[in-house]
Amino acid sequence: RAQVYYSMKNYKSAIDDLSIIIEAKTARATLLEAVHEWRGKAFFMLGEEAKALDDFNQVQLLKKSFTFSRAEEYIRMFSPGDLET
Image 1 (cartoon, rainbow, N blue to C red):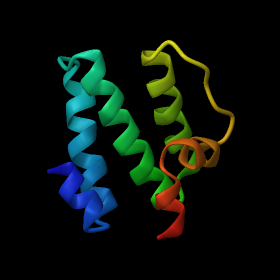
Image 2: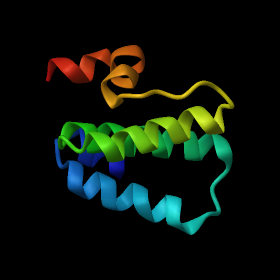
Image 3: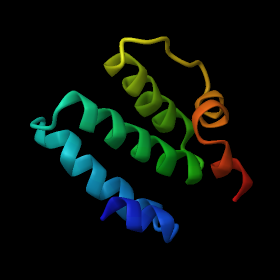
């Protein structure tokens, strides 16, 4: 449902749904990667870069990979189409 909200540009509702999954602490790491990525993108679209960056870096930590210093770096690397909307 969160992806539908995101595609409708209802970012707040997407964030709310994704936050429920994160707070439940029962999801597998691979699902959590996707949840944090979608929530980070929603935060980014709302202009909340610090929150977006937290989620994007959480994705990278779950992948045991490098982290970013700016949310826009993540978007440019993994979701450049979101910058065109």
